[in-house]
Image 1 (cartoon, rainbow, N blue to C red):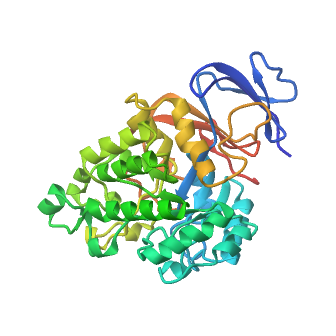
Image 2: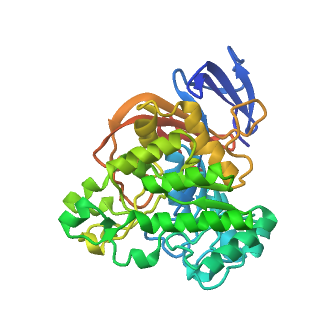
Length: 433
């Protein structure tokens, strides 16, 4: 049974202050001088109240890669970052390409209790790109899968991509593409450009991303199905999505926090924390994706939270694994890159980090407005705070964050999931203790 919570003086979406009463897992009352009878009163004066954040792109690693992350540790990290729901990518072992595996992931999330875990199913068996996985069985399973991706691998064969787009139309599913032409990126280590040339690292050209996006836009238009582009990273990709939307194609796109802030210049020190796929791009690309997010061309921010054990990163650049952890830092990076620059306000943040990802992923009960009667999925954020991001801010099993030692604004003070607190006054709650 959940307790009653009364947040006094919260700034809903960063604007008008109000009291917010949570009772029985829902928002029971919003107003001024709401009665505190029977409720725990929390001073939320000046805190920005947002709908609980939703991440459409999280790697939880379990089953199979528990040395990097587990569903429990990953959802603890999510809660610490203000997330109340995460979509779990299928590159596990075994791969989440069947009803049994996605239902296992769902059950692990329910047992952990820190955030809703919505599995994403693989597009192809074993993510090998050879034949379609059990899309219908995953869709009709208890996990109710609606998003399918081979993330980490591109669905390169156009015939298989077309068949996948056609198949998911029956249940309003969406194919989330990792846009990377494998032939154009063999051995690639860093964005193809001046920095990769100076460092002698094999380049990952922008056209390898853009050519797949262009092809898939045309396929989605031909089939009349939904396409989602994962971790878009180049100026050219933004233009392609903008063109597709003007044509009326049912395409959505995401950008990661790190592609909104960091550039390939950070690779000069060969610090493998900055090695990621797609790679960090140029400042020109950063400005283009910021503009695309601001004008609605890019629909959402998704973390691509990719934990790795220390030995996978504490090695030479060429041997290091791709990926960064990002759940705990995401809203703070968006605050710096988009809010402090005047490109987004807090209602926009609620859209790109909560309502839109929930809508794209067909996830009920999340991304809902802060209104009476809605589920109590909330994030209370201190926009006036400032601090150096440190290992103590990380709550998963891995520490491969590119922000360690970096000054970031803001702080998640309270996270409310299903009417109970998972973060209280900036401290992660130990559930079940």
